[in-house]
Structure formats: C-alpha cells, structure tokens
Length: 202
Image (tube, rainbow, N blue to C red; front, top):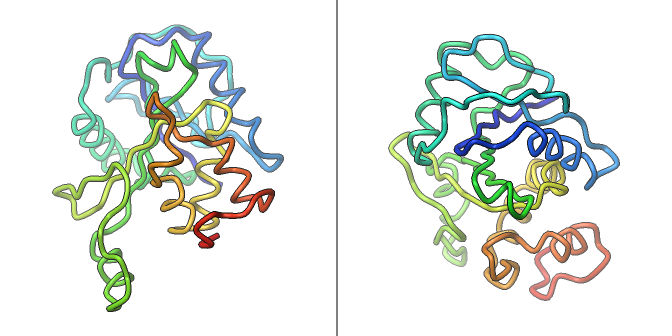
C-alpha cells in the first residue's frame, strides 16, 4: 500500500475534502484510500492507510504556503515522523482555492535528476525535461499537474504502473485543458488502450 500526504493551502471546507476523498476512488476499480490529509506541521498521528471521508473542519498549517514551503515542510515532517505505512516521499497532493471551484487538486511527483540523466543519455534520446517541472535543491525533478478529483487515484496509479511513458503523456501540451488541468478523459483512454496514442509511444 502507498499513501500520499495531502495538504490544504486554502481554507478548504470539510465537505469539499470529503467529496475529494470519495471522488478520487472513482477512476479505477482497483482504487484504495491513497490520500492522507496532513492538517498540521506538528501532527504526529496521521491516517497512514489513507484518510476516510469523515474529516471535520480544521485550520490548515499550510494555508497560503508556497509550493517550495509545502515541499520543505513535508520533507521535515517525514524526517521527524517516518514513512511507515507506505507514506511517499516522492508524491505530494494539494487542495487549494481552485479545488473548491472546479474539483481539481495539484499533484506533485519527483524523480532523481541523476536517474533522468542516466535514462536519457543515449544519443537519440530527448534529454529535455517535459511539462511543468523544476529541478530543486534536493536533487530531484519535481513535476506539477492539476488533476480532476475523480482521477486522483488513477493518475498516481498510471505513473506508478507505466512510469515515464505515462508521465510524458501527461506533460504533452495538447492534453492540457484551457484551465491548465490535464485532459484525463483523453489520457485515460490512451492508457487503457481505448484509443491509439497519436505519437505511438503508448
């Protein structure tokens, strides 16, 4: 099992969080409670097997934090409290002000820059990093996507299962909607084999 620490950078009502937790399971028949809501930086007890949709309203320690601050605070939390239960140090999920408006969340994923360089060192390989990504001081490339609630689990599972092929698919500009979110309806059909990948990579 795996768990993604999930924080709120806005005052997100409990009913929106609970709706997200329920909706995130809808995109896959294999879904389980993946997202673990972290309310406070000094919180020691968390739902290491995933948070159930019975959250009550709370004041988030992560409200108005930048993505770098969120990343640092989560790194510090993991350093203090450990990763037992499968808590990931390569994934972060964020519910923000837009989550209340359009039922989307931000999902961050990291891989070591050195690994990227090794796997793209062939002469015919494209070494450029696709999508909305940054190389951070921790030596990792951090990607960021905005994903509909109902594809929360599916998005994580597809990258975990298909690796860089799925990641690069989600980074293609033609599969970003006008509002910046990933066109998961199309991407999921490509990954599931319902339609062909126009670039022939899947």
